[in-house]
Image 1 (cartoon, rainbow, N blue to C red):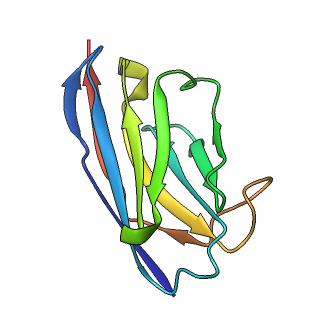
Image 2 (spheres, rainbow, N blue to C red; image 1 turned 180 degrees about the vertical axis):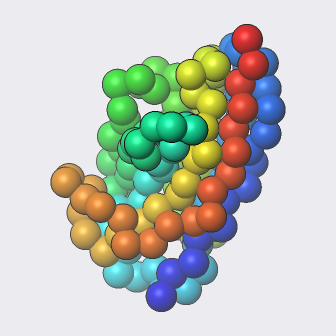
Length: 120
């Protein structure tokens, strides 16, 4: 069992930055893929970025060049550095993990979410 706890959300003006963190607890040795998803009101949940066990990242086109996903294995913590934020980035952001590789994955574990609000 894995528990994921996000932090770092908040309100920021367009062009600003935020860094989300996701602390993972439990048995992590079977984890292959971790990532961030987001869901805006009235919209489907979408994947923002993921990172393989070997550290290889993948990004949604909408955030490429602005967001950076990283992880600290020693701290069992996943990060999402978000720069040049836009109002359309406003959403609830969820941390997720799986025991499968990232390609074509769907998370097994989810965090409770952290709200990001970007004002124009």
